[in-house]
Image (cartoon, rainbow, N blue to C red):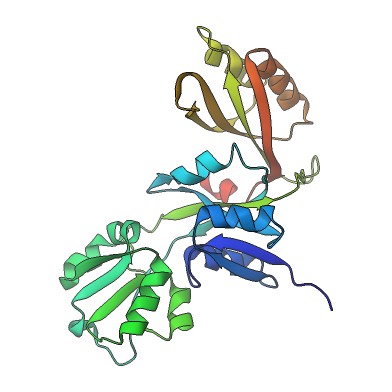
Length: 282
């Protein structure tokens, strides 16, 4: 019997992470995990083949926990996907919108749907997960309670959508990365490519300036640069960087070679196809 491929995500069924898994890996089994640590462990231990992890949001910024896991994890990035975040106001079947008095959702979702909460005079109730909020409302069976959850959750938990697209901003987008146990680099020249890596600069004056100079002189576009403390120390900062291009391209190859002169180490996190969404933002 053929083994079914599995992709792990953090959250409950019906969450945004589940939505993006179902959208891009429709023939795979989506595996919900309680925490990000559990997602990483599932792939590292072979219980899942890939992980779908949110890394940035256009409103909330970076997902802090993930940026600390990536540099130390043995998993590598093999893809990226962008998901336009949509929320629906949903309640038990038969409920009317004028009956609703409280809205359950994750704290970030509540903050991103302030307009509908204020318009309807709802009391916000914090849940641990947007899809978990839908489950809670379904289990309560109370027609005065609603959940602000991704549309997929309504079908999973048997809820009725009272209003669609209740998010305040129509540009709310989350970037997800796909993680694998193996570093599978995208082929050179097939399509636009993203290269992600972490590096530690030497604790010297202007070390970062010198380390990044090679990217400018070789015409390499750096799209992300974020810093981290290393082992709680206030020296020897670590950086996560992302650039357009493939390491085998002459310009990026020279830039990485120059980077090595001013750093103590460089760890390649992934060389993967750029999602077409990037081109639409230029």
